[in-house]
Length: 255
Image (cartoon, rainbow, N blue to C red; front, side, top):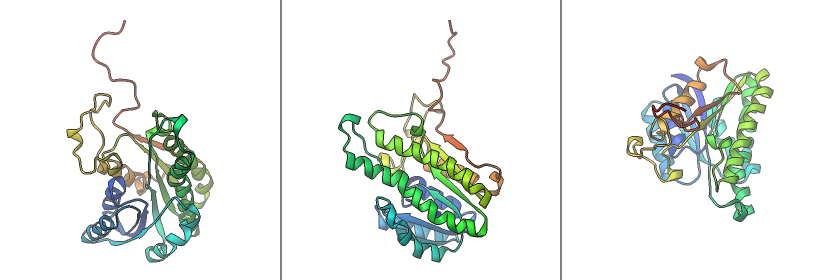
């Protein structure tokens, strides 16, 4: 375990929670933000402390990107220099494009894109001072593979993926790497599947036959944010069990 700090947004459940627990194995200080469930945040703090990490959290509402700096500042003071930022917080809603409420579309864009834009600016400025850091943006396979009814969510994730590429180019001279991870279906609270065992959710359309557990995405985060991935920046890493590939071969001969 190194005496360095990580910061994860939206970590009280799902991928964020799994990532916090995983990174606590390699970093001495874990900071995270929460939005919906303060009691879950307090439980996570206790779990992180039981692993030997210093743990701090704060409430953060990404629907108001203009207030991100003031909301994060007290947490950043407690954390000290942040070595790894994981932009994980997300929200989604579903409606046909022709019926999608513009205010709701704006809310989804603020949380899934503009909020992470603001968080990344704040944290990257600190990283630039020490000429070192890694930013991991949790996007989605829907950034390139659209789903009906998810116009705002898909566009926000596409914007986040492109932002990662721009950040990677601009921040590389400052010693900062930026990586995008695009999960497929993952059993989280967002889907009403928190704590469900993947093997209990068979998926014929996914070559590996099941969704992901949050811990499997967290392992990818741990790798790309580690020294072992020191030459990786600007990459879009898909972690979807093969869902975006062509249907698996059935063994039948092709004509």
